[in-house]
Length: 127
Length: 484
Figure 1 (cartoon, helix red, strand yellow):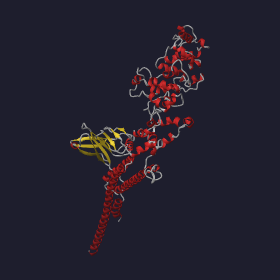
Figure 2 (cartoon, helix red, strand yellow; figure 1 turned 90 degrees about the horizontal axis):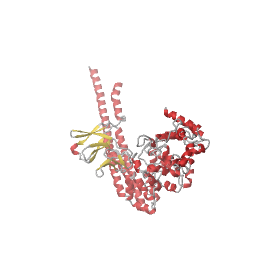
Figure 3 (cartoon, one colour; figure 1 turned 180 degrees about the vertical axis):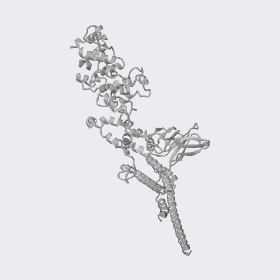
Figure 4 (cartoon, chains in turn orange, yellow; figure 1 turned 60 degrees about the vertical axis):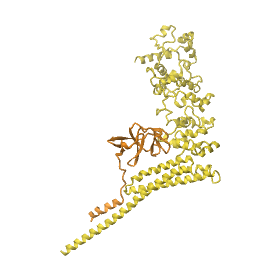
């Protein structure tokens, strides 16, 4: 009887009241195909539950940064007309190395590693 | 070792060979007869007044008539000190509390150490000596007490003394090409500089903010003008009611700033992007920003808000009433975190100071509608967050919706910036974007929660069926056993 309770009732109770689980840590994501990403452009890529901005510079080089503005956590975007990473909330600006250059952001954007594997663009956390 | 021995000889001679009267100071008598600049200045030198002769710094024996003997190595003659020898010669006494006491001085004795640790203690372009020696600022033969108005380091003279080098672009370029050389020009436009030029020796001059012997670069965390140290440096005068009394200005700026959103960021979080006093008032050209320039000053960081305000109908209204733009609603030194409470028509809302149901009615209507909209967005966002967290806690896959929630939060922050346009249409557009996201996320979260309930009911039914089946099987087996 006890064995039956343990085998049947406990899983049911555990299923009904699951423990809190930490967010699954994402190691890397595939951002797309090289041919699909235009030069001089920026794309927001989901990295777990956080956005990452993938920049393809005019010279074709890739760079990726956390897309969370270091001021008040808004999502930044690439402004082709200004050539900067820009935050719409308070006009914060970062250069294409992620360095905060204007407005209220107090520090640079965290950089991610970009690896081109064949035609795939992969983004991963820096060690 | 030789140097130490030399210094000992000089010190001994200085104390023992000092002439009883100035007529006995043969060095001085001879040089005076030559009419050189040193002997012209020396009679008023604070050191001479304390009984120190030429030999005190140059060595030799001031009591001997014969020049060869008086200026011989045997008499400890050092000649004219050059480079670092100058400061070392001064430090013989000025670094010794005992020696200073003998001369009845209560001056501090760490000046040379401080000087060497300062930016002026770096090596000079020649690479053979430090940039500044004691004589660079205090002069050599006509050294006056700091309290004397003709001392080059007296508050009334110091600006001139510092700018001898600091306004010399050619010289400064050899050390730091990016360092401005217009400090004096700016200082003359500052409240400090204007008062200083009228003879007010109480106002800030170079040393008031930068220190004297221990001057460090503004990037040095120990510098008195390093961003996190600067407010306290300004407050050293500006928070002193007794000192500031005659200027009839408030003395609570530092207290207010420390509590403000900027002060907390700078002083507690050490966020160097937050402004210190100089970011709004200027540093060498420090003055309160004029009413017309307040938004430009705030706009150096809060550019979008300033742009929106300048294009809004409030710009004209504020200009006509001569109201300082950002300051009117947000204050100056004690700027608190802007919350929704500032917006609207409630008694604690800043809009209600000028707008009411009978006065400036259009603004009243807009303020009330904006407040209702941002409250609804906040409520929608909060509800979506609660639902997403609930679904997540119940083990449902809801990460996509959680990711979208960022857009609702962003819309709320953008809306708060958009308030500065004072345009209902533009505000509604941004808030609408956020409300749509919050609503879509809530729907997804509801679906996830419904799915959760469905799964639990399914689980219950399945468990019941399995349990009934097991019990039936058990009873059936028992009946078979009884029959057999």
